[in-house]
Length: 151
Ligand code: FES
Ligand code: FES
Image 1 (cartoon, rainbow, N blue to C red):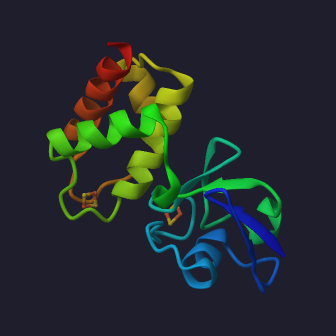
Image 2 (tube, helix red, strand yellow):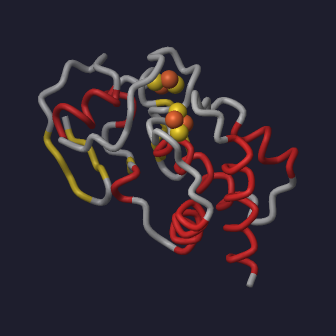
């Protein structure tokens, strides 16, 4: 089946029920998307499909055939740049395992809501767990990125 990932087309020989995260990692070779819980509970596997954040561990690859999938490797644009800059400036990641999912969720939030309140951030990021508990820095990073976008 045809997958469109980061604006490139891939023909993948996948069982239609294969979770997208494995198709991305094992068939397309993009390993920035991480596998955590496998049950839509942690957000480590977050990618964008047609601009919306989704859990790739519970999304069958057949469900996104022909749609535009963006992974951490393919994030571009001013929101992504602002988030990346803020993450670097504030040293947001600790072990890093959850962070591609955090960044994907943060970019989706700021794209939809350029000036999010703490409540907006809590609501949007609630399902993205961090075992290193970097939550305060993630929140600060989103606010800093928001200010960059404003200014
Ligand atoms: S690995 Fe997909 S939500 Fe945890
Ligand atoms: S930075 Fe380690 S799990 Fe989030």
